[in-house]
Image 1 (cartoon, rainbow, N blue to C red):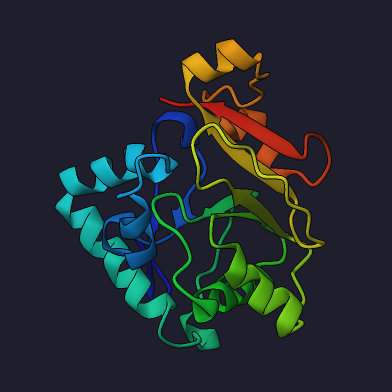
Image 2: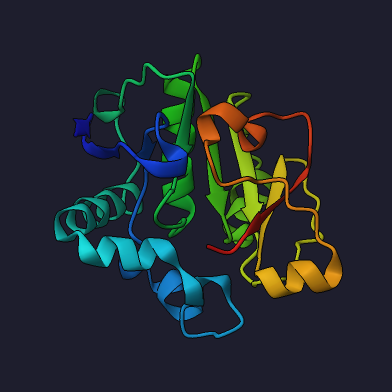
Length: 206
């Protein structure tokens, strides 16, 4: 459904009960380039396969990208969100700095909601939070996601709350990786949506 000028997605599966606003990996040039790299987790992207099977969803997410990445939203265009926790980018990733600034505006507009943003595009975060010195809202969780399968991020920034890495079953067994994302219910788990607890989140490849 539309919320403000943006399409809001409701989910089944692990994200049931947590709505999201985001964009489409199948039309994001950065995501599309990563999908060509066999070592990239994006080469095994479930979201890319999912949106290609659902043309209406793909259209809505592409429209979101066109809005979020090209101009700053006016106050009257911002969504009103009545949820305890909410996700940015469940199917795609940041396009540019404008895109991130719009997510910041949405978080500031809804101070009683805890937002979590997953992104592999760390340079966009650096440009906004470090170079431009934009303040990160207290209700925004930033999850830095590893672009590579089986390669954990070793990154620290003041604005990063968690890292997120995907491992395949063989690597997990050979290296005794302790998986702490069960992929069952994000609403019940909430590890990624809290500022305390595990900094590094590890998930097994589906």
